[in-house]
Image (cartoon, rainbow, N blue to C red; front, side, top):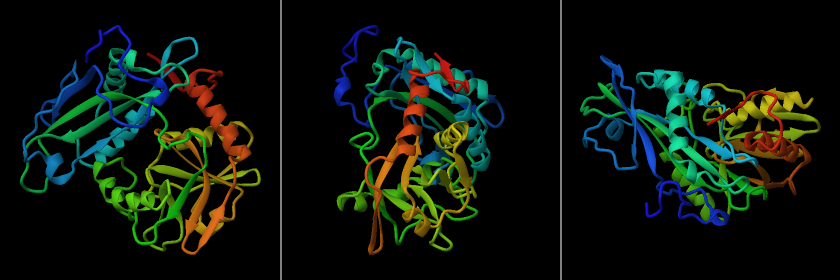
Length: 341
């Protein structure tokens, strides 16, 4: 890496972006249906060795999680609700016919990777250490069926804001011809195969000056589902609306935390199908996810209509300040959401 393990990493904290940087260590465990999971081990960051016929490469049998470690004002390092990532990964593993990672093993792995890469955790307020657990079928498979052997890997990368400008309102365009997921599919799972199809419409929108796209439902093409890889919220008066989980929308952990946080602040939260026309008539809108945390939406282009929401709304800002304060340790955590490493 060029720097001693206990030295400062070669990073300019003030210019961090949401991009890949190789760090010091990662976690790898091997498992199978017959033998279960090995204990796994922390190793130096390095390429993985896979057969060209690996099930994950040929049939996409795999999932990933996203989570962040943060440095508090007093220098501690904490994770945010890692048990929720472990549970979501277990549910996804069942859907994709992969052996589940025990919750205790999952949390041990992400804590170990965080600790081994502690020097890569940015200073408070300068970014986060993004953790990427991945689970996939690693053994060779020619027919379409579950792999016999699996790998569980966790690596870490220091990151800055997902969207350029941080809390600067972003512009979105509603996708007219593409859908993220359909009923009965794997939209509610963080499956690796869910993301490549969205690259083309997203790239097109960005080339035309938009930050990301909004997907509508695949049946009626009327209800908001997700913003690229983030959950959608809109605010009307003192009420927050977000699409209900119907199996086509990822059950985001940031989404859940916003719902619980908003209710604790005395705000009404309604989870239901959200028509795009209703969303365009709301007072505020924002998207949320591990990478973006909370990003205010400044405008939405839908066909010939463009709705401008203006600057960051008061509800969006209040939720952002409270949530990031808890995540980063700047304010009290009454929910016991953070776990010290």
